[in-house]
Amino acid sequence: ITQPDGNGSVLLATDRRGAIVATGSLGRFGLNANGIGALANLFVDDAYKGQGLGRRLVTLLEDTVQDRYVGLLFRAYRSAQGFYERLGYRPLAEGGQEKDVLERQLQLQVAAAMGEREAKASLWMEKRFG
Image 1 (cartoon, rainbow, N blue to C red):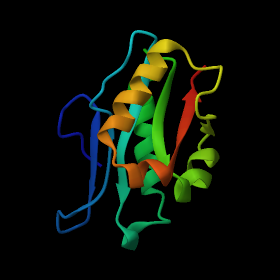
Image 2 (cartoon, helix red, strand yellow):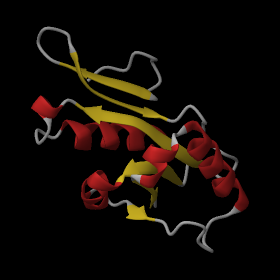
Image 3 (cartoon, rainbow, N blue to C red):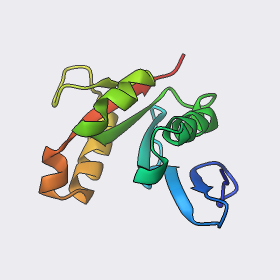
C-alpha cells in the first residue's frame, strides 16, 4: 500500500505487476470545522476481496486523522454496510436529530456530487474516534 500524495489522504494497493487493485481516500470535501472527515473512494477489485485490503485501507486512513479529528462521515453502498459495521461504523438516520449544521453541509455536498441512483443505493455511515 502506497501513499502517492505523501500525507496519507490517498492510498493505493497494487499487485506484483504494479496494477492498482484497491484504493481509498479522504474525501475531496475535506474536514469541516468540527473535525468530521469524509471517507471516499474505497474500492477493492473483486479478485482481491476477502483478503483484508479494504480493512487495511480504512484503518490506515483512520490512523491519518484520528489524532486530529473526531470522526469520519461518508456515504456507503448498502451492500457494504456490514463491512463498515464490523469496522465500528454505524448508519445514521437520514435527517436525524444528532447531526449538527456542519455535518449536514458536508452531507449535502457529497449528495450533490452523487447521482440519484447512487444516492438511493447508499446510506450515511459514521464513526467517532475516542
